[in-house]
Picture 1: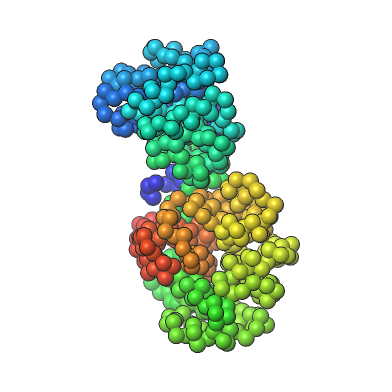
Picture 2 (picture 1 turned 120 degrees about the vertical axis):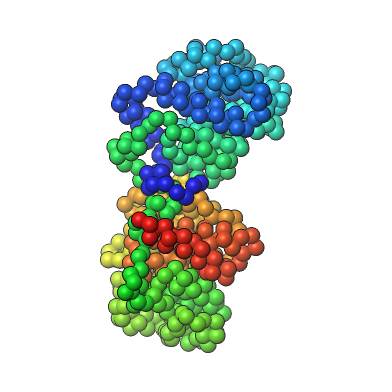
Length: 511
């Protein structure tokens, strides 16, 4: 995924929103068959890049517009000298509208993929002997599990070792959420049109897509004004206008003061990871508030991060009476139980930009109502950073797809929610959501989430709003993971943030 372009390039469209984009374009004077022609030609170009000249291509076509794209691609590839075999999921008399017109324009001989309720006996050999299979059976609009001959056909595709190019989305993947109910095609590449769908970025759909190519087919970006999408790819162009600028006359006190509350002497590392990341993310000052028994351990590891002794939860209010301390993180290594719930309540009562992570979330899950009520009445941004286990404890009633769960959790709690994972979702109470796609697998290591929480609080300290701070932090965390590379441990991430931060500063300076 390119990290350059405009904010409009970062828009994700649900299948319903994409259908509206098509409709608005057609109403604006572009015939539907013309859009299908351009889509089919884009599929043909992608297919031609994947096979040698004069290679053999099998195109599997469904009865809808996805199949219509396949018919156009078949005509173009045959004209270019490729050997093309077209197989239909249903008989031609099931076609209608633009798909029927595309079938008529194809002008190629074809054989049905169906004999009654069974796959044609020669199809397995045909698929295995091809240089490429084009999956034009179903697109992003599929919202149910495949069954019958369609499911059998997908299994036959996956069983052979032939490369697959999917049209719009691999058949079996739901475009709105990336969910696979049952069987789905596993593609090496996917070509989609105008904008990606959430299903291209959310697992398991993302894995089924392989490399995703976005083809422009003549839909003007102005249609997005009428659609008003609220789901985005997480990347710099989405939030770069909110990046905290450092004035030439600025100083450390003008860049905010973050506080990280640490736990007992046996669990000091997590809070130190968070504090270091907050400082690296740009907070002017960072204080690690530490219990007396952990003070010496923390002091022996820290230099630029300051230390403050907090003997009990009563000391939180006294510490935060200093209004310069404007952003707070609690949870990493703090401990689980009533003590932590009391600390969270004190912090919320002090109205600071707040991040609640790890033990803070687990502690509050046993009595959610007052926690959420305090967040909703809070006058400063609040960010929750659960992984799937913490999310299930905090929002046990939410069992939908990841995007829906994150949105509903944000609406319910009143906080910005980062639902972490390889496809982290950042959701705001107002319905906006961003899906992250730059995180490498080696970020799945102990302490990685503590670093992420620290980046968030460091950005909040600089005055970045909640949704933007969370989205920035998740993206920066991914970039740091890529920079550190395989074999990283959480301690590597702080220094690995520098190249990503430098690139963002340079990019923002050009605006």
